[in-house]
Length: 346
Ligand SMILES: Cc1cc2nc3c(=O)[nH]c(=O)nc-3n(C[C@H](O)[C@H](O)[C@H](O)COP(=O)(O)O)c2cc1C
Image (tube, rainbow, N blue to C red; front, side, top):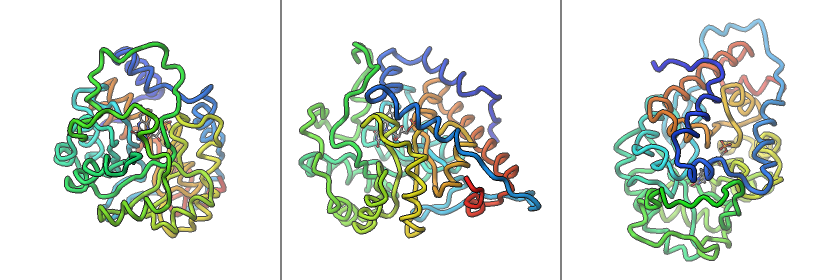
């Protein structure tokens, strides 16, 4: 098994990623919307959660394994979809797929992946495809159909991006040192979408059922913060609801995902799984998210930066470290499984 990293590992990952990445890519990955309020608060919000540990319980054997969309996973945390993975490491999504498969965690591939879906599928285990829809749905259909044909097990429909919001902290860096085709490998030469009008600003509940029917796959809706919207997703046939504010990269000053999660989980009431991401940096954050009702927890920037800092091996070490932290915290909190984390009073 991959060794866990020593304490302070995240600072090292960040420093090495900053050293290695082209300046433009580093700034793009670290960029936030507005003043970065949501992005900073996401992280802080997990750290503010306090546990009431349970005692007098046999915690020699613990397991967080479970099944999501028909596949078994060892752990309830995984890799959120991020673009530009091939700019972070030449192996890009292939490295991420292998590391996720070895760790036994869910792996979500961005619409804007740098490798062909069939290659990603061959490299790792079960994977889910994240979808951005276009103003004319026909423009994104070939990409979505190729993901389904390559064996994607679920579609993660991102709904908090009617168009890409303005990123700050990006500076005047240009991307002349980066091959932008690295995030359009599955569009078969279709033009890179740069105009706001090319994105689906008219997303509606009907898109959820349409996507599911057309591709024959479960559709997860990513970017939900309001419990009423979670209900709308369920009415539209969503197979899971993903609480996210896009890592604070779309609308700044949204509520944090840690504060949105309990109400969404309560409204969903176990009818479908609830996922969450945003500012999750380690095992204690994952435990907090489980305690607040998440069925799976996703990390965006952390694995992407690990990929940049040390390739597949470091992504594997980061996943092993989060697992070790999570397992230790779980035992110390007196929990043997995910269900028991819900009694932590967090
Ligand atoms: C560089 C970068 C690229 C991203 N690309 C996508 C994407 O293609 N599709 C998507 O749904 N979300 C994308 N996201 C958002 C992530 O899926 C996730 O919601 C967010 O990063 C979680 O917050 P965290 O980075 O604090 O973990 C991206 C985030 C970053 C940082």
